[in-house]
Image (tube, rainbow, N blue to C red; front, side, top):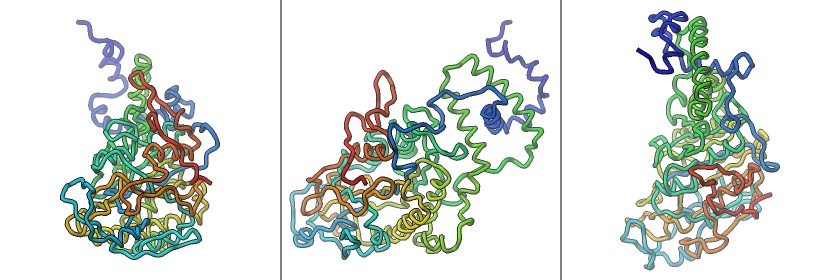
Length: 476
């Protein structure tokens, strides 16, 4: 009886010449690591097994001179309120308690509500900051405030999809995937795109760091927010060098034969690359995620010694260590949610306490190490919050006007772009779309957002779709 083509080439007898059945079963568990090692030998010209150009994380040139080598995106999940942190509105205080015709996302809108916090001007630029963010306030002359952002959705999940991918629905490549697709990564022993998630899990899940229709090589790698950031970094103690050598010999042959018959199987190559990366991470990732290597003074700087800020401080410090090691794109989700539908004062007080010292510490540390000039730092959520009250002392979702700030590589500190109206409801001056934010990020990486494209289903796609303008007045 004739067997299929695969078994014609890889007969059971041929496998048996390499390993007995018992040996095969014992050693099969280390196959992924051996595939990784096979590719590492290929890179060293000991085996012929190269990945297709454009599908790897090898560094690639930018379209023009870049200001940024890496980005740390401090994502404040749940949507902080601009009028309560960075953009106070005197008119809102004056009209506190008055009714309006503003429509709320959840219905039953209350009257206008003044901020429960007090504000003070900081720095040479005179930027207003609330009394809960006094450590970040010391850095305002490094920051460019974009006060006129707007989103297409007033629901968290679509808005988070949009802030990450440019589209308010799942399945599209995220900004980190586009950047690593365009530029690769500086360190082949670590992921090019790392996400440190919300300890409660991100709304919308892995789509928020997915590669969409781009090769899966460029999807984000999620680090855990509690415990060991990366599981299973250590090799199994029972796997010896001899076991690895035997498994490597077999897997290299199987891989070569598959590649010869399926030369266009891109996703197969991408899966192999993920195994390879996992193997290489055993060399370096353990050191990078080990925060005990940092001094107590550094832990103090990031707020790690304070229970209120320990979690976010640890993530911010790890973000610095990652970009210092050559990781291209790091996104750091806040823990819990800024989603203050009730008791905004309690919610924002707690979240400011969790993030103020870590964010300020990150800016201080990057600057002291000479990394801020090449690292773009972004702060903000998926949309803003209403000027009217909800449930007595909370605020509803507001996609019509919200705030982001940027600092570091190529950013003109102490600047402000755009405005919302007198009560902070809607962006009215120099409005900034999510496409504009993405165009600006790509520009700082030396990438023309109109030229960074990928052909999918007969259409050329971009991170910025068919829109997007670089916000030039915040650029140095």
